[in-house]
Image 1 (tube, rainbow, N blue to C red):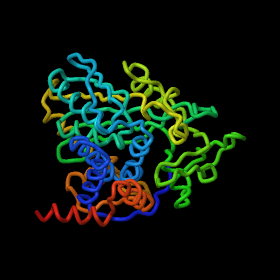
Image 2 (cartoon, rainbow, N blue to C red):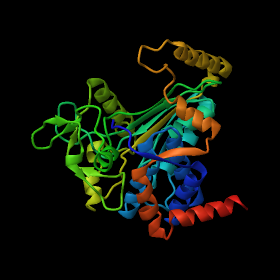
Image 3 (cartoon, rainbow, N blue to C red):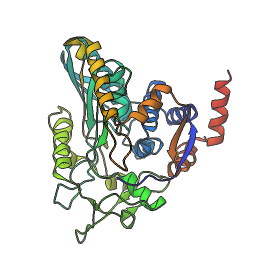
Image 4 (tube, rainbow, N blue to C red):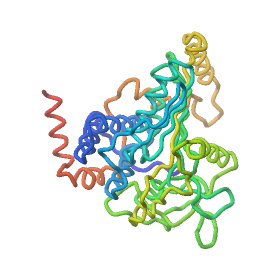
Length: 381
């Protein structure tokens, strides 16, 4: 995990408008545009700076490479009472995961638990966006996907395993929910970009020199910038995991996302970022995904669950802080507050702002200024 880079404040409603408008200018339907904008904005509200505005680049680069079909709608290709399989049709993961989440929630409401698999889709951004859908419905969720290979097996020197998100949540009453929104790796390509653009270092020696195998915390010497992008960078280095616990969780996540998934592709067979950039890839940037949903109200009163969740959160908050440490709280509580209050102002990384408006929006004749004018006009209608 890298140090935080320089940020700028912006109006959340404007940013959502700009994201949706740009993706629709690229050819997306309104439903697809909403799926992308909603998920990106939730990641931004969570405070996940590299899973907000900049991660739009991950679907843009696939679209520009001809590996993302912006007009294709994800389709259910297998289904039972408590499970389903969705073919993303090479669309974005945003649209695919939104459909997966809605379907899993619906099935869990009837049967108590459900799992929906996805395959043949591209990046889906912050998976907290999809777990939040379940929490709002009074459900528990666990979801992830695999990715382009960008990490070494523990003790290895090859990019063989994925750098996946790992998100889970439960329902809650008045207090923040139990919400896990993390990753099963140490860094992303976004950290490479930050190392170059803002001089940030990783918090541990997780960078493997591809020639010597020596470890460091600096990605900058291995960076391979991609023209027009401020978040998606390639790199020649390999990734070292911090401990066996992360390694085992990463591999277990592969079991769910790629191995048992009926349409899934395992990470070693997913195109690398280098292959995508060099136009050598012919597949999507994700091999497979899953969304598990549990509705606790099927097994007992939901009110009891909400009350226990709130008491648990209160007990966490009541724990005395160690000297020099901030008061304990529920992970994600600040983002939860922003979401609940629908706060007007959000933070994004400086290094993601210009590439989005000048490159991604600019290729469709849009700019920050023109998008602001459109946004203001539709607000005043």
